[in-house]
Length: 206
Image 1 (cartoon, rainbow, N blue to C red):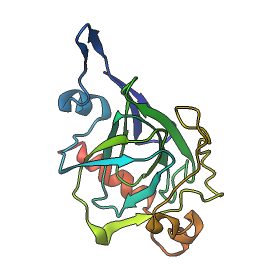
Image 2 (image 1 turned 60 degrees about the horizontal axis):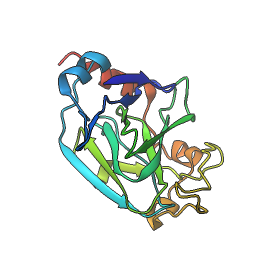
Image 3 (image 1 turned 90 degrees about the horizontal axis):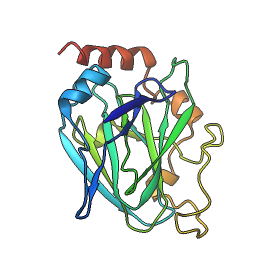
């Protein structure tokens, strides 16, 4: 298992070692000790989520108040998604920037994003099934969103599905009504980089 730190501090791409044979494939998708040794903090899993999405469905950009926010370890066990990490931490050197990783049932990569970061993805195939190991349970009063199509962020969403069909973003009503990054900042809804960094640093001392 290899961890590759992304350009946004606090986010990693995880590349597992697959062991194929005539029966199929075996791999370790998460290993707590190796995770902690590599990332420098534990991931105490409080909740596991699973979503199934038609091609074109966009979920996000989602995040939660810091502290305690919600770190996520994301995999796609069936189908394919373009997974996107967005730096929404005010004061961060990479504030407003994003990076994407394809998660699918072939490479079986994963993405880990620390507390305070925004997360979104678009499904590239019907029935794409995503699992999330979450550090905190869902708490509606602490959950927020930023519009995934905000031109100021400028995420380049794919226009072609895995099977070659045309792809158009489909958002839930809640996500479609989410504020832009600038509106969320003006409303005081975004995490502060200093607060998020201090919180994550404290986790490494547990």
